[in-house]
Image 1: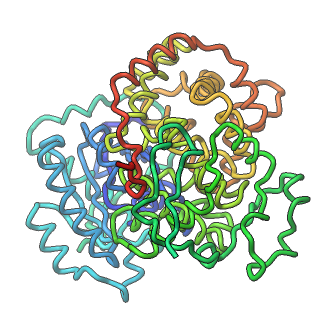
Image 2: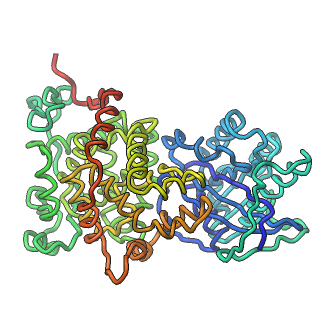
Image 3: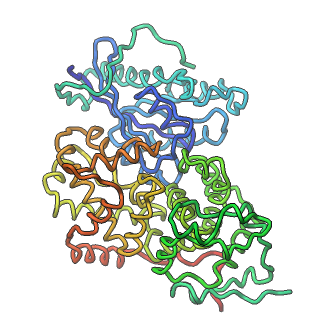
Length: 205
Length: 353
């Protein structure tokens, strides 16, 4: 299969909000209640198709502890998309998202696309961040907001695919494919290709 | 009754001037602070002879009779363990209990306690979690400059696996101070930069093809060696086997670490050379870590021919490897001269006037 585009996406957010779980659920369809804490970063990839374009997503899943922010620029450098994750049951984790957005606006690629994921939606009863507040914030910064649950799988495919769509949109608007289209033609056996239907799937907001 | 100042003179030279004057008025806490009682969990033969988990219970607890396993005892031989380690440790616990803070270290320790060897019953469901939190919190009080950094949890848990709580704590302190692990954990991670720099140097020397392959594909040493550096491989090696790695590390320090990294890269070289992008190259080096089964699989991927590899054999093979130690030492010395060593003054251990 030929890959038309290759996008690098970085996951950012506080520790234990579920960054690794979201990435693992998306790429491998697995959920591990006992996910180990991430030191540094994990690297995953998945091939998808959006409309007629086949895309390889390189997902760089980072460690959440504040101290590791020093390393983050190495990971979001050249990233075309960022999945900013917070835990809906933990107020502080939402403020971390806000501060990541500020940092990315200053430091990251100016074309970077954001998607915010309010994770652990299966724990709705413990919610601390009103959904409306999160959605309003996302709107304000021009990002999409998704309610996700790595546990149930809700919203997971949608939020990652939304990033890919946003990046594609930006490309087509700017007229020229962004640099990352050093598409190499090669056979990919690793991950099953997933066809994303044209109609917008549920889960957003 | 006022307690006389505790002197740390028996411990490493750096701290010989320090006293616990600030807390000298405290009397030592009852062993209640050390409940639940921690027992080493390893199955190293001799440790089972020295104590029986069944016979001891917390009501008759005396930390002195909980013995560390022979491996852990050997490790302590490489360090100057403080004679009054127990008193100092219990004081630190008292400090953490009396000045509970909601600082980022405490919060992160809480978040990570459940995620340290998540498939290990002792650390997820058992007393181990409480003990691990206690030890890490005590360390974050002991050295507030470093506090708690992700990665420490795996090292501390592995030390606890083999030793009593007091030994585990001072072994951990020894690793940070005498084995320069401190530098890895400091803000900005100067130690990480140093080790990656040395590994670059060694890769160029020993694995030039692989090195240029990495460069061409945008893979840096930091991408795969950071976890290894922060956890001394404890997040990768099954907890039951990591004493083989620790044993060599306590003996040979970072030289062994570098050798082990090069040994692993060398064994994976062929596979890595056939991969042609960042994620594909990093996948064999960073296996999905959540289950001990996968950890065991990792060492199998390093096997050559008919060899039956385990971590003990791998550690031996790595030790035998020859590297340009002179070059490494030059780089280490350069880095040492560049860095300032002023963070060892533990906030609660004041220098006498």
